[in-house]
Image 1: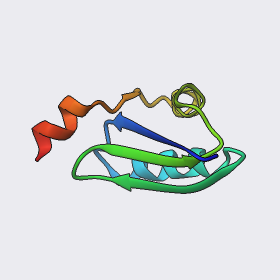
Image 2: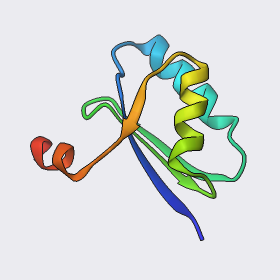
Image 3: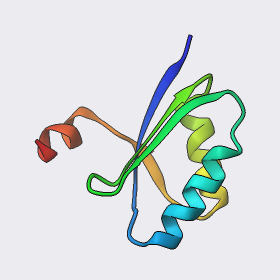
Image 4: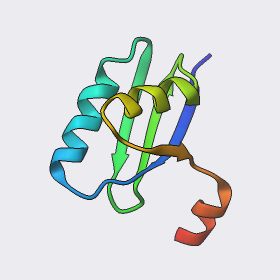
Length: 76
């Protein structure tokens, strides 16, 4: 069964987004991924955990944290 991992990541420039996408694409067993620059949100679907995706992003020097419902409500 596929997990949906939603993370808050600071997406402030095109170079950051490029690094994040390159890192995410290397993760095994992902089905889909999406980067939302307006919300500073990265969503990855597949056989992965939140911790795995955060670790991959830390390797490219990006700080990520779990996306929680409070952040979703604040954006609405």
